[in-house]
Image (cartoon, rainbow, N blue to C red):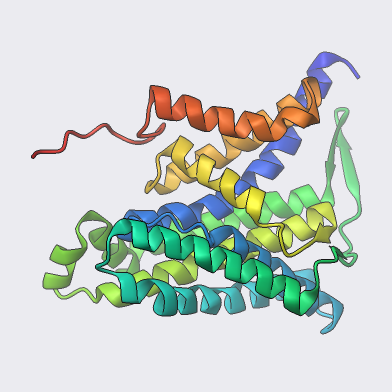
Length: 295
């Protein structure tokens, strides 16, 4: 395979991976945009969604798409429970308390997962997507097509919710100024709960897609993708929805190119090198604006 074909093939693989990062990063950036919380438990919510999808296919015998919807619904409820039980009581606490709590929730989900489903990796069942297309010498498989399609549908649905619905207007108002929005009659508690609900559902979709794509899941699978999705959110401008999508795609493409042309050993290092560069050069991210704070 010549350089051009190899480059384009890695680009296709990178967009597939980046789409998954984008779905997880959307949850980070939505939650941060409203309550300024870096929810480090979000990667483990993604892991939970993967297991719900796995059990729905394996034990309930459901096809992939109903299993995906069930995973999103159950994980959305988990996200709301986490917010109500762990974060809501600390709504007015110092930000460091929320951050420490998020790390604690992350560990709780990881070790609860190891207790209930054991640390042994599970092989994701066959979903009937083991086919591929050869287009002008480039290979696109069924899993990648599903990732592209579901990611586009979910992002379009999220855009519609945020831009066109009453809930979306309330979310945008709360992200601008939560206290003022509450004075104007917006139920900020409901808005925050729904934000966790939607973000967790997107993370669950990413978890199921990863299980289909890589054919294996385990209780600690959310650690590295969760951190990389955070990098993607920072890269695009945390708190900005289009930034999370673009940041995820860019990160996935860079990882694929590094793995394909340099070494797979450095793919994780590349992600965090990007984080350092962004913080040094443009801390507000690609879509963020530098603002001066009055004191």
